Length: 171
Image (tube, rainbow, N blue to C red; front, side, top):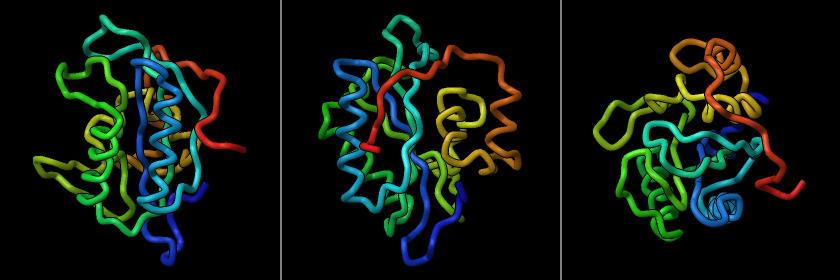
């Protein structure tokens, strides 16, 4: 898939989704349904189960990535993602801890940021299989830190990410 977008469709953004409390796949699907208010959902990756990173005394995560064409600028998009998280019960208590929903703005077409609220591309995307594997489903040639996502993925040691059945969007 081409990582660029049609100008009439806005800018392409890739959003990482994760959850490990309650019906995690249901939470990801509900979030994607809410993305339609932010722009046009272009594609969704396969769904993956991931061993926790950082704080490991918690259930595995369900992860995916969505491609979104949006007219929102990166800061407004991030704010909207945080609103969706809060509306779905997200509480920020333990860093890398259990959560009902986690939405990360991974990449935004033509934009780089290095601020206190937003860093683009996402500062740890290149080192996390649970980000790279689903991102590679959608945009294997997308470049992070000057290297294609598919190449970054090949360079990583396995991190406990495995495909699971289930879809975020209807076929």
